Amino acid sequence: MEHASHGHVRPADFSHVIEQQIHQRTYGRIHNLRVEMTCERVVIHGRVATYYLRQLALQAALSVSGELQVCVENLHVV
Image (cartoon, rainbow, N blue to C red; front, side, top):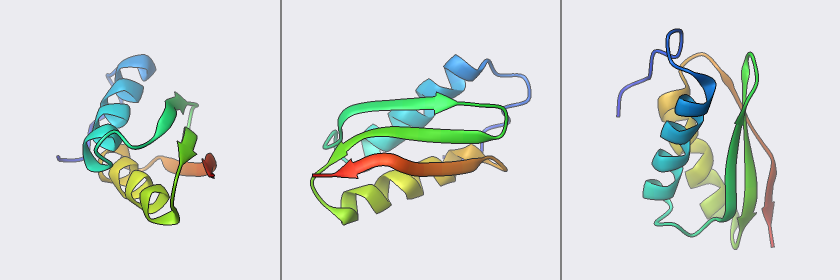
């Protein structure tokens, strides 16, 4: 998927696009997945079983987030 141009897309819609990309790349293995958008950041919330899944989620978000900073501090490995 190409970088999204988020200048004309509502944050809620863009959050959904990122969530879908994460869900696809991790095969739905993130529990309580939620993506939150702020002015310059994408914050990923949820629980994963491994650091590998956490990395997959980060890479998925980066693939569509463009210039936005992606934060995975709220994506906990349990």
